[in-house]
Amino acid sequence: MSYAAHMLHRAQQSRAARTAQAVKSYQAQVGKLPTHYAEVELTEHLCLAAFRSGKATGDHWNHLAECRNVLIFGAGHCRETARKAGEDASQYQAVMDLCNRAKTAMLAVKDREQRTGKMGLNAEEMEIIAAVIMTSAEFWPIQPQWVFAACVRAVRKLTCTIVQPKGN
Image 1 (cartoon, rainbow, N blue to C red):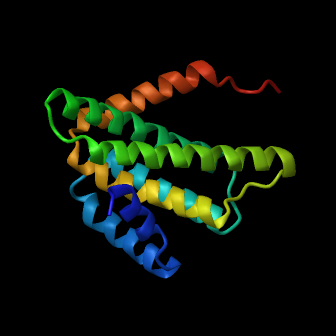
Image 2: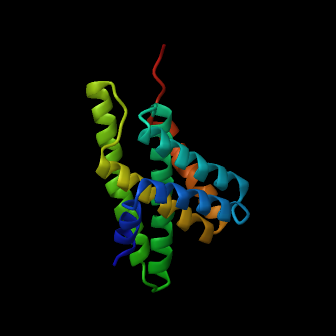
């Protein structure tokens, strides 16, 4: 089973099991992670909970989109590093493939919100986004802290350059 398939399978577990697992994962990793990443991970789980409860806003969407973007940058960096070293890069490619599926899901949410005025995820989109969050929670603790920081900076620079706030 591929890494991405494994993460999708985990995302399909019952809601109670996913919630319990997320809490355990968060509690277990807080001591291992830089404070800023632990806070990011918690916020990702809270954003997903907002979508599950029907209370999501554009800020929740933005945060999850940034989570996905930072993860694909990190996986891309690791894939290229592995390729240059002559190592197997398939696990990083699987993460990138999952992130590409998440991009499609996030764009569908944005398009739906623009048509209906309602922010929400369907079941498939929910599973994909949950898989990205779980993958992110497993990916970043095993990477050097500088990689996470560099990916966040790169994504924010790109986003701030392209996305302009609406005028009042």
